[in-house]
Image (cartoon, rainbow over all chains, first blue to last red):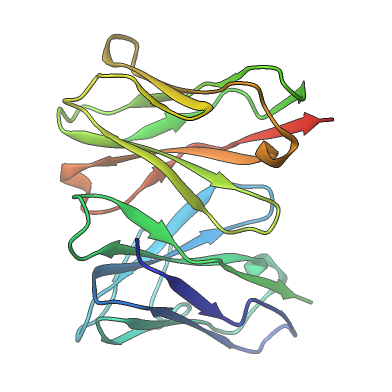
Length: 116
Length: 115
């Protein structure tokens, strides 16, 4: 399995500011994703981070609010822009590992974001 | 559209009891994949198992076992002789070929194992 790290692990931010979350994988991966888990809720896919091109967003999520970068096969960032308390969630990076059995998907440790 | 239902929001057991977590899924696709993940209090999501729709063989891994039944669209997870360290939220998830690589998660079941 791939080893996935995220920075920061947690943060407390003020309304109206932005936070960039980093996801680093220890090996090249086919696909990277960003999920959101609101308090006490299940996980929802925000977008697929495409290497070298714009991310693919799911319904309800837009690039202006959640810009994503993926400059190479091992790294991606998610920015939560103009934050409000409703953005308080755990944000998780997920990867499909190159060479793994088809459709095995792993998750990073998550970033706990609290917006005041 | 895909849907995963975990009807049990919370389960509480005493250590050494067996416990089964239910998962029912909905999809019109014939090719799909089912997953179970564990989320301990620390928050990370730990991959437990993946099953594809063509493999209905049940699986056992130590104290964990999974019962996949296509006839009832269920993929239940049993922990035998539960331990306090099993306390976590468990998520069942579904991925279908025609939905890209999106995982559809159930609402999760919080398992509390008391000593």
